[in-house]
Image (cartoon, rainbow, N blue to C red; front, side, top):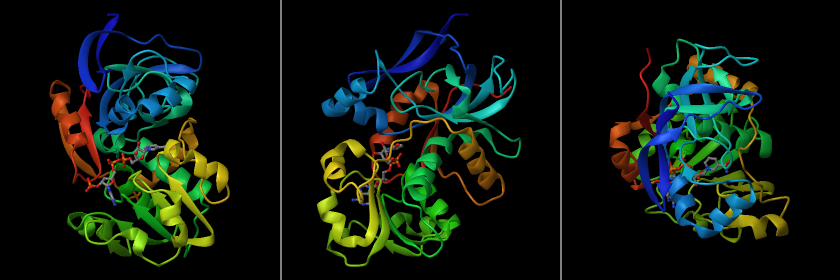
Length: 315
Ligand SMILES: NC(=O)c1ccc[n+]([C@@H]2O[C@H](COP(=O)([O-])OP(=O)(O)OC[C@H]3O[C@@H](n4cnc5c(N)ncnc54)[C@H](OP(=O)(O)O)[C@@H]3O)[C@@H](O)[C@H]2O)c1
């Protein structure tokens, strides 16, 4: 077998193809059979935003836009760390390389962590990219510690539900901004103060924060600046929208881009997941044949957490 099924974006429209090559295994990589992956708005944003396409090409994206950011799966080749039959979870470089909306992916081993039997393959697929992004922003960039106040804009989304839980693990005081229907869930996940963006304009509020994490990509630094402590950080999830602010206010506006494989950090997140500190929030699940519905749903408003796409059987 040399061909596989996988999704490729044709303009902004996803297409399931059955003639994609099974990726060749590069140096330092293993082949993984994908079990579950998630569907996010990220790829459609990429396909519809010419400026993002240009920047992605500059950063090394080549050829068709393939989709998917995170997955659970089974290793199908022998590497240095993993061997055939190992269950894993992993994420991908946002720009370069193969993507997991396909039956197989070839992936550097540092983007993977072992998947323990106690973590369901569904929950595992919903964790890697969202939780890594949240942890990098909160701990590596903003150095959030016990007692710091953080404001999370877009707290009900895939990254947001992880950011609330990880901020809680780090001991932060959390203000979560999301529509009212998600407030109960976000309180359960650890949020202290809830704000409904449909009734309150956060830019008109006055509380101060050590960090504002914008997962909505709606806000610019000038709207948020007065909400930051003197040495506070504004971290926009789409850094490309804030490049000029990053140059001008380099101490306050920080670059978030999860591109490095870090199995150690991923394993730490898995440990939190298996010890009950970090929970995957699954909005809905689709089969690969229903991929168009999954993408339509990913584009809709009002979801919480991640949309799962089932690719392979766990046998
Ligand atoms: N820089 C990186 O390394 C990196 C890595 C991964 C992801 N990302 C980016 O991070 C962003 C978030 O990703 P995601 O997967 O969490 O997306 P998502 O699941 O679509 O979440 C975005 C959330 O924002 C909410 N929202 C929209 N407008 C809002 C507002 N004005 N106030 C508060 N909430 C609002 C939406 O809620 P409603 O639907 O209820 O409106 C939605 O739940 C995306 O832009 C993604 O591309 C960046």
